[in-house]
Length: 157
Image 1: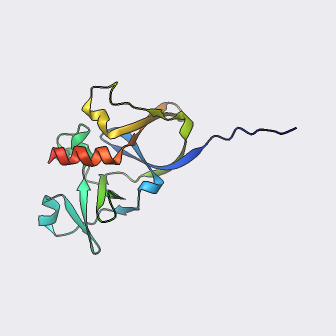
Image 2 (image 1 turned 60 degrees about the vertical axis):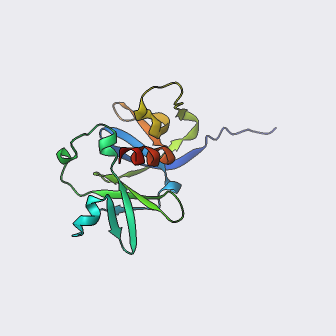
Image 3 (image 1 turned 180 degrees about the horizontal axis):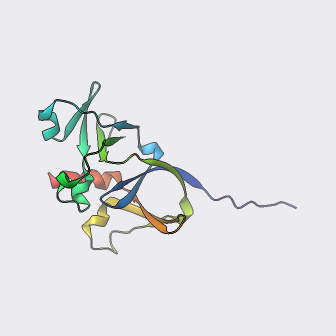
């Protein structure tokens, strides 16, 4: 008699908070998490760029896109960059203000968010959502669609 084990597939994700939304990226989409360098190159930061070593990285600040219009009201804490590639030649850094977490999520619980069913342009940057149970409540985590994030950020410029 053969016993069939029901092994659910799961994947590791980097989760982080932006403007009260819990967001996630697959760990394989994140090259590195860095503390945001506090540099004196004010010209680069005004252009949305930051220098990390020998690389110039474009900074994506999703706080404005996801509802925090006044970025100056953000906490003056240590910032972090999630470094992710858009191509082999271009690196982007998603700006966050709290350290990210590494969690494992079951893939079968992810619900696709079809843009045809929703009229909110806010949802354009999310591909899936998952509801996870925590100690006293549930939390919704939105999986970012990086290609859509890059498109939306280009439109914001």
